[in-house]
Length: 480
Image (cartoon, rainbow, N blue to C red; front, side, top):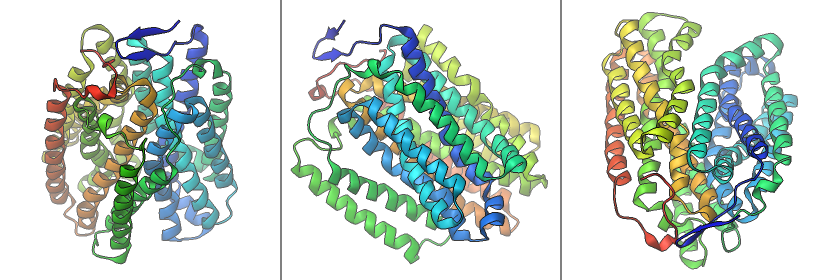
């Protein structure tokens, strides 16, 4: 049955709950793989070097190649899904990731490994952007809030356990088996998804053909800028390695603007992206990047330098920050389903992330108990936003632009993480060699927290804005 509301049509949800739950299982399995793919490669770099040779460039591209194409492809996948269907797009992206995992497992040299990791990043873009759009299609109301909370919890589980699991696998059977496990999990996900075709047969489609030139130009913008920040994170920004990607990115921006002004149905729907509620939710992701992502990346190096602990001990200590991301998303889903509006929970998350990151910077070098306490605060803030932010963004977007909304928010998520981590590292990493890591972490950490505060204030103000762009032609599906 089709339910209608003023100005929009709601697609019918699956009549058999079993099919919806299978779809959710397929998405969640694939979502677990993506963070695991990042952490697994990072943990295995030393073993990869031992097997393939000590090539710093090859090692860097094995990790960063995935991150760049992941960040650059999410928007294109979202827009493509709005036109060819979410089920087909997710299955295609999963198949690409599976093929790349097989090649990574068999790679005899860096050339093939790096190419496979770049291809895997493209598949990962489909999983995150289209996967959340599929959950939005299959569930509604409180059920959808719980589904997205579970998605946040699964991503948190992968984030928290990924380095440990990958380390165990690497030591037990070898680094390439990390990619084999990822491939097996993705095969399971795609096979389950193949049984859920009926749930997407009536999904709405966006008008017009897919804008391939705009997608390629946008891919070039993100890939070039992320590449520039990755190159600049070494501490030297005025080099050909950073200036050339910036120039290429600038040309792609110019080309994208000219292209979008000429086409009838542009890749980027600025009416949606500029909608205050949607913009506010998007900026919550940026707050998470400049607070949680920066801290979870560099706190291990901080405590190793400050306390003289081993890498294993520092990794275990960081679990004070990552463990809350396992259960807190479920708490956020419970609150939204019972007593709190999503934007209220997101506003609390912003406050906790800003306070937590600022406190970690301020207490850098303090006794472990003090630092652990403020790390928990940051982890709770991140957990409250995980999953819920995707749910709220898709609730604001019209059904036939759900893929674009999911793709956009994941592009901002991955892109802002790359920027935040690179800027933080550009100041902090050189300080490790000068033995003043605590002072450097405190300075750059406070600066990063201030940036998060600015984005957080704008986010809260815009989320609570009463002005909406009615030209999109839909009503807001989020809770008021």
